[in-house]
Image (cartoon, rainbow, N blue to C red):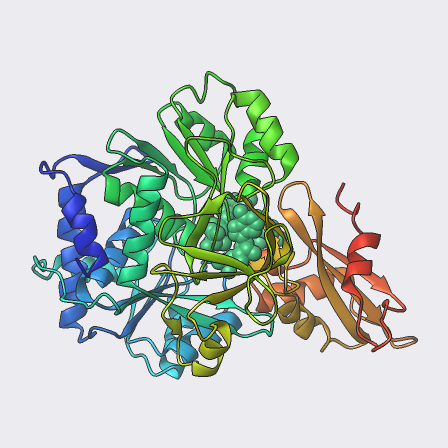
Amino acid sequence: MNNLYAAFRAAFPSDLSRTCLETDKGRAVTYAEIEEQSGRVAALLAKLGVKAGERVTVQVDKSPEALFLYLGCLRAGVIYMPLNSGYTASELDYFLSDAKPALVVSTRKALEEMTVLAAKAGCKIVLTLDADGHGTLTDQAQSVAPLTGIAETKADDVAAMLYTSGTTGRSKGAMLTHRSLIANAETLVQAWGFSEDDVLLHTLPIFHVHGLFVAFGCALLSRAKMLFHPAFDADKALAAMERATVFMGVPTYYTRLLASPALTKDKVAKVRLFVSGSAPLLAETFSAFHRRTGHHILERYGMTETGMNTSNPLDGERRLGTVGFPLPGVELRVADDDGCAVPQGETGIIEVRGDNVLKGYWNNPEKTAAAFRPDGFFITGDVARIDKDGYVVIVGRASDMIISGGYNVYPKEIEAVIDTLPGVGESAVIGVPHPDFGEGVVAVIRTLPDKGHPSEAEIVATLKGQLAGYKVPKKLIFVEDLPRNAMGKVVKAELRKANAALFK
Ligand code: MCA
Ligand code: AMP
């Protein structure tokens, strides 16, 4: 089976009138509806002239219709390219001009702005889709007869493209094939024991790997029912938890659940599995969650480029501070700078190889070549060691990337905006421990003497105009000098240490 949708459809129950997902408003979406509506989207794409291998760029809110769109693209063999709904016009401008989509789907509110940006990137068709499922996409899809088949894609064809940044600023489109997405989802269904008796509480955004390929993929491949929430809200999640058997989230979800007195053993009596990932789970969260609920959260590790690489075991010890073992089908080594495995227990960079790994970066053979070793291992940039029992322990990152509430933040992007402001000499953006987001973004700004500089509020306003909200520093610190090493380079480690208690 070479098309991800074909793999999903093969797992559908024989009775298509069964509920596949239920929204927080009580709307039930059946497998028959999934089949029909994704078929309508696929037929509409053909009618609009969007061909296999072309990109459909999507910046919409979470809804069942957004899933129909994703599945319709798979069925048509068209590349699905979801974008974080928080991205601003200047961020979108880059993604569109790089990806050159044949079709863009946006909210009605963003239509005017998106039409201009799309046209600039050579794309003439912009359709709309709102959180309530309405929009020109839905209207037009209802006017065509649904496609009943599935495009004959090859395993190596790109199913989705997700943008992700390296250390050096500009995002790159990670091309994920049908084969990688099928392989990784099938592995996770096995590893985590998913079955049609499961009820997955789905509160993650669906523009990233975690919510789209891991959570949704596991549910569709196993016929598990989904309780589908538009976003994570601790109170609403807890109210729904009584009916769930599996929950997945980033560490912030767990700290927010713990902050509520409503999280009790009784509340989670039906849950068999809690999964965490996308950012390090703190030991105190793991332990507090166990004390409160009796559950050891299962921590796993992955990346946009690779899907999931390692997982703590479903049965067996889920070891605190580790991300478990390489998943079946994933070869993993901890290597030195030359790509040679270091002895067990020593620290190096995680490299992985397997069907799960991306095909390459869109339109970027140099970055693709630099990301792989000659023997096909992909260099993740995550610093780790393997403990004596084989558990992988992540100890850091090769880049100074920050992970805030499960979203990656690249300091360079923020520094580039701040450094252009009057009266600013230079800025250094760092991540420091934050009780809610895991890491909180902080900008340390060296101001120029006697020049005057914009106020904190003005700088924040400028940043918000250009960057998604989660990237905007939670705190700005003005200094006369930044700590430097002998080469004159700012020593961020020192800044992180000095500000470690900022949010405590
Ligand atoms: C929202 N805000 C944030 C974040 N999210 N600030 C810092 N970090 C964040 N993550 C800001 C907004 O800009 C806004 O700022 C204010 O918080 C309120 O926004 P709202 O949307 O209401 O926030 P929220 O609902 O509290 O959202 C926090 C959240 C959300 C629930 C933790 O960020 C979230 O769902 N994160 C999950 C991310 C995720 O799925 N990651 C997986 C990536 P202002 O008020 O100033 O405007 S996939 C991945 O990493 C790999 C493959 C893997 O291993 O999974
Ligand atoms: P992204 O580029 O959004 O896919 O983020 C992937 C990065 O998130 C990885 O390279 C890791 O640095 C980090 N990550 C994901 N899961 C974990 C985890 N369980 N523990 C620590 N870091 C993680």
